[in-house]
Length: 286
Image 1 (tube, rainbow, N blue to C red):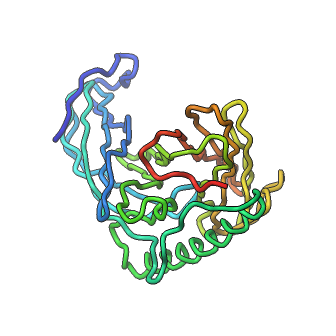
Image 2 (image 1 turned 90 degrees about the horizontal axis):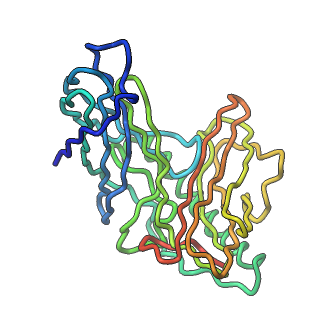
């Protein structure tokens, strides 16, 4: 179903090009996920002064994180949109699985202290990193063509797979709009929470990190069991961990990891929306 909206303010419209439509992406929404597919919707807006022609948008996906390798997953038909209006176009994408043969879902981490807990978590990271490398080989062999990349939080939602965390990119009219989707992660107040994200596209580079979190939350980015130093890390591609100690009285909050790539000076923000009552999979906790 297509939802037509006509609420684009005049100030948002393109001035000086009265006869030219101009398509833009206003919003990318995660709707729901199941074992085989995940459902999304994108809101396209026509900022011009005349109706747009039907066109095709390219949808790309990447593992949750920053500067990860993109793969094309879908060509999305965009209908004609009247001037100063928008349309919401739903779509679904097949899912690839992170669970390799013989892998078992991981339960809550248990440890007498943060160090022991992180060591156990590091073993899980090693397994997931290995599976991501296998997935990259599968992508090159076209096994997972037109499928979403594996979700780093998948084992927390097994076997229902009712969640997907990753990056989506919508390319239309010569512009790309990227959205990092890791919403409704269940956090555990009064505990140390751990969440994973990918950095790097396979090319050698140096990455630096800065964390924005609500007041009273204590956090850091870890590489294995070691905090990432201020000067950053040299990597081709890696799985890192956001470690957050959340106060016992916290209700909800958003943590943002800002990643800067030295070779280009580009920055990317990896967002985590955290809530103790979220229906999605929980963070790993110690």
